[in-house]
Amino acid sequence: MTQTSDAILARMMALHPKIIDLTLDRVWRLLAALDNPQENLPPVIHLAGTNGKGSTQAMIRAGLEGMGKSVHAYTSPHLARFHERIRLAGELISEAHLTEVLDECYARNGGENITYFEITTVAGLLAFSRTPADFTLLEVGLGGRLDATNVITPEVSVITPISIDHEQFLGNTLTKIAAEKAGIIKRGVPVVVGPQPEEAMEVIEATAARLSAPLIAYGQHWHVYEERGRLVFQDENGLLDLPLPALLGAHQIQNAGAALAALRHLGADEAACEAAMTNAEWPARMQKLKTGPLVEAAPQAELWLDGGHNAAAGIALADVLAKLPARPTHLICGMLNTKDVSGYMAPLAPHVASLTAISIPDEINTLSAEETEAAAKSVGIEAGKAESTMAALKAITAKDPQARVLICGSLYLAGHILRENG
Image 1 (cartoon, rainbow, N blue to C red):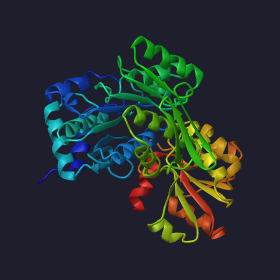
Image 2: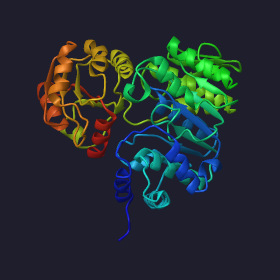
Image 3: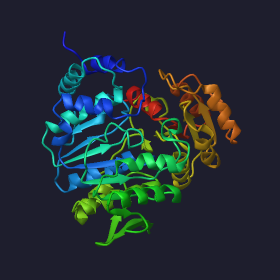
């Protein structure tokens, strides 16, 4: 019987008792067994940060493709299918190719301990090494210093805004978390830095200085802002007047700035920079749902999906909601029990009419609907609960058929919605 990628991925889950165990020893061992594919990649742009990595990567990819370049891209987690994590020269990896590299990595690993993220990252690097392209975009999974992607020397590193998240793995202060993220900085390799809290920036600057890595930092070497419905970017090469990013939200202005700073460093012209703004796509970042069973069940409603899940994401989402045309906004929210739920919800409170809490289907770390409902009430949001997204949607639109409904709180919930509503 022919193996499927799903079957091999399920076997890989059993190779290590922990989902997350930060070290690079197992990755280096397997890479060596595969003749070090990480040494044969097209030039790499390596991205770390707490918020905005995916959006920034999407804009860099759109810009490079606007220059006529072919681009590999590695992201995580996936939303609907694992294949989304590995994009080869612009196209999602095929089932046959994915099965081949997963099987090879599983066999070469020889049953040794290795986490799911580590072995699947190695599989991505193996696929990249065997497919011609002009650039490789690698997004860090968690942290940076000990992340499985941190086995390359890039053309340029990018650090997007850092905030408190994943404290159980990265430390409970911004200084500690920044030290982990700054672990992607390599000796002599330029590093683009997005807006940062002061204590995070101090760590990044000290690390860059120690490694003689040229800084390309927001507020020092480049500036970005919105003016009269346009995006204005300025660096030592001059000023760009561009369309606003296709990705919604004021926070995307900063992400766009980091993407443009990286693109300019790589020699992008103004047309490529414009392509970065207009052509970027990133699912589950204020994505408007236009087809599928949920849309059919509420044809007059306006349905949105967002996967942001920490306090910074709550602030960014609140800003987007504040700028949308006036319309009662109702949240359907499911969250993980590892997140700062109240920190996420508090900024949203002034902008929403209600929140219906659900448990994330088939997710072991979901917060119960009851706990999510209680958290919403604690920050002043009128809240209830439902058995499912569909049940919540029907209850909301029974009272207000033309409601704006935003499904939010977790990338895992977003992935479930995209699979079910595809």
